[in-house]
Each structure stands twice: as C-alpha cells, then as structure tokens.
Image 1 (spheres, rainbow, N blue to C red):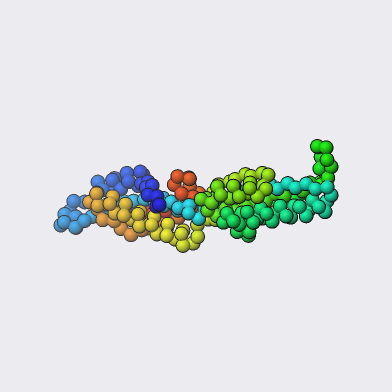
Image 2 (cartoon, rainbow, N blue to C red; image 1 turned 30 degrees about the vertical axis):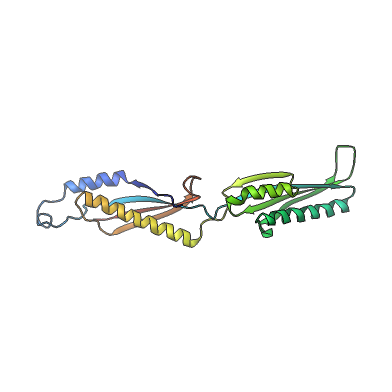
Length: 218
C-alpha cells in the first residue's frame, strides 16, 4: 500500500515570492494579458516514503548442549545446530541466512552431574517481517534456548526503488510549485537546484524516506 507523501512548503520562499509579486509591474507584458513570471524563486520540499516490503528482522538465537565429555558435547552441539537450521528452513528461512556468531565450550557447573557444555550464538536474517512469527516458533521448537529479535534489519532499498522514489517526489514538487504559481497568477520557471536525501523513516510511514528539495525560478 503506497503511503501518501507529506508535503512541506518553504515559508520563507513563499513570503519572498509574495513580496516579489507586489513588485510585478502592471504594464508591459502583464498589462497586455500575458502571465508575469515569478519575481522570486519558490522552493518545495517533498517526502516520498519507500515501502518496507523488503525489510525484515534480525533474530539472535542461543543454543546450549551438554554431554559427559568434550567430544560428545561438540557432536551434540552440531546435531542441535543442524536441527535448528532444518526447522528454520521449513519456516522459509534459507540456511545461508543462519550464521554462527559465537561458540564456547567449557566445563558444566552446578547441579549434581559434571560434564561439558557448548554454547552457540546465532544470527538469523528474516527477510520479510510476515515470516517473523513462524521463524520464532520454529527456532523454539527446534531447540533454541535464547531468542531475541530486532526489527527493521533488512537491506536498504535497491537502486530502482530509490530512483522511483526520487522521480515521484520531483513530479509532486513540480506539481505543487506550479499550483502555487497559478494561484498567484504567475508563471513557474525552470528548476535551479535539486537536493536529494534518503533516511530511515518511521514504522507507520515506511522503512525509508526519500526527501527531495527543488527550487524553481521565475
């Protein structure tokens, strides 16, 4: 669902433009019925949200296995990792998205039995947030002892997505600037400067926001 852009107009530019309008002569081309040009520039700032369709989440998982000796503990740890990857794969998470970020082995402490414990820390990229719930369920069912999630960890918009957002913002900026000029009875000139900036947005407005600032002359 496309989110309607939020539009802000430069108050200073608008005030300057109004001041210029007062200076437009009432003779010559304007007196003959032609539309006068803008005496000052007008600047329009347009924000175009980029939908978060490709955005996902990052899961931090922990696995803990214990056995009587070091060799058995490491073997059990590998089997536990295989089960976890298989469970996540069944939930739509590719094995390539599951990475072991930490591995620790040590003597078991506490309790009435001694042995060796292996701790594994994993990072799982969930490329689409609609798969997050099933990924968490699969991780827990497959033996994960620790589950933490971080939203909005997907890849940034692609080049084509950025280009589309810029084009939409520029078109909207020109349309708004033309409407202002027409309301004031003046003619909009060519663009003299364009500034483009992309930043992370809010969950309600999109994962990223493309901001375009265009100045038009008279």
